[in-house]
Image (cartoon, rainbow, N blue to C red; front, side, top):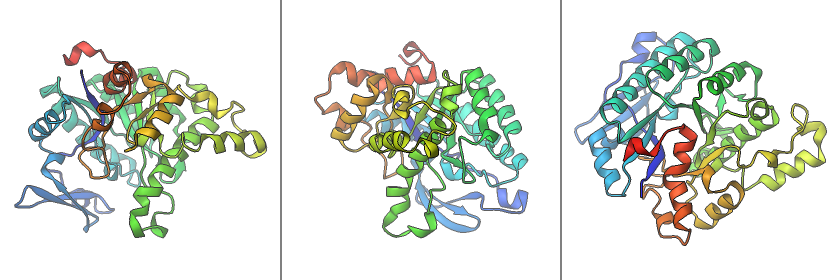
Amino acid sequence: MLKIDMHSHILPKEMPDWFGKFGYGDFIQLIQKQNNTADMMQGGKFFRTISENCWNEDLRIKEYQTKNTSVQVVCTIPVMFSYWAKGEDCLELSRFLNDHIADLTARYPKNYIGLATLPMQDPELAIKELERCKKIGFPGIQIGSNINQMNLSDPFFFPIFEACEKLGMAVMIHPWQMMGFNEIQKYWLPWLVGMPAETSRAACSLIFGGVLEKLPQLRICFSHAGGAFLPTLGRIEHGFNCRPDLVAIDNNVNPRNYIGKFWVDCITHDIDLLKYILNLQGSKKVCLGSDYPFPLGDLEIGEFIEKSDLSSEIKEDIFSNSTLEWLNLTKSSFQ
């Protein structure tokens, strides 16, 4: 059975000194070390250590083979988004990252699919890069759950989503710059609590703001199984019904009506939660995702699904069919 992991992250092994080039900001720099690891430095301060499988494409393929997975959808690490930077500087950074992924997918067309990154803080430049990425073979993009704490429903970003729909470019939304980040540092809470909340924030914003209503052909996938959105759908719907004066001010369509009109990945680490999501979404809107190579991801790449009592048809939908539909690709391209 073909397995496509639609949520994994990659970086080039070497990157320019963006801070030295631009002269400001918390740009990421990689410091390679002797033991096949690298330190990610953010604005000159240590951010995290990453392993060789963040950049070594052959090693990644070998590691995926041990999990019976042949295709990886790769995108940058969200800390690279750099939406806080000047638009033209973020465009240069985005082009560098996108060209790296485009080269990778051209050399390994059976193993890698790419998602591009855009300078979302400048819609004109973002659309320019979106159009370029479409021409060089990208089927979609990855964006953050907010842009400099502006919700994705803000009219400022609508032209970008409109262009994505027009060009047939899929969109993966990944949490970043989590709400309350500085206040909840202890216990890894930004990742355990903040990320699910951020993804729900993005989903609610796009629904309540009318973006999904105005752009019904826009193909969006929310990472981490949609975060807190689907598990708290009852509360969200109740809020819509009981306080329409606060919730339904830009779109009077019940949020439950959008279930099954977007995709989510399967990163739940919990088969019962996944079954709940499948019951809501249907198996054709749930994709295999891992968040590889990071430890909070499903580094067994769907093993808990393989061992479950889900039908072979549902497993096939999760493992490949849903992702192929989201990205508008054909299975024959990877067989």
